[in-house]
Image (cartoon, rainbow, N blue to C red; front, side, top):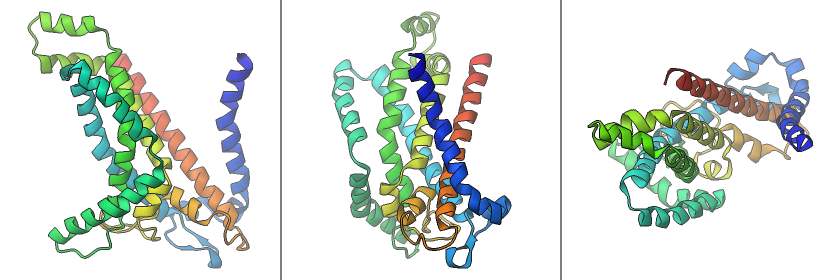
Length: 280
């Protein structure tokens, strides 16, 4: 058992160490501020600016969370507190099916449905776009994240002792007041963990987002402009053009950036969870 635990603990360390070692060649030649703050991506000229890719990843993930977060929380509250047990039992297989759909299927759906929808949405603002943009990527990513986050939130709320709700109702609190001030506070840590895991998962999604986000190396100025997230950069280019000096190392550095962002975000989520437990 201890050996199994040790093996699990070593996996992220091995991944991180491997990415660091593969990134060393480019880090020895280009300064870290130049890599992270540079906005020009011209591998043939030795220019590797990751700022457009980092910002695109953050923007797409933020859009998806702003959509999926409220939808998942409200849906979890309704299914566990208002809906009948029959409805919840009917919805569970549907949520599981949505979670099991391959990302490439979501990508095709995004191309066929979301991209035309975003085009029409932009036309209302008299903006002509191709539809392959940050908003399209964010919507597709939100739909992909919903079943993952929703499943966790349902489990979190169902795990809250029923005695807490009954005690609140018995002293005259309304049903919504009980949900807001008792259930959500009691489940705060689990809710934060669900959102943290959902965002971490969204940061690494590749194929579906790659198919609808546009993949243009630029710093997006609006939701209707194309972006190029880090996972898409790695998926599109790894294995190709490796004759270019430092190209392999640059892509591995991109993977390292993604790895560090996810680790830092999970760490911040854990701090928020601990803070909530301390002052709840």
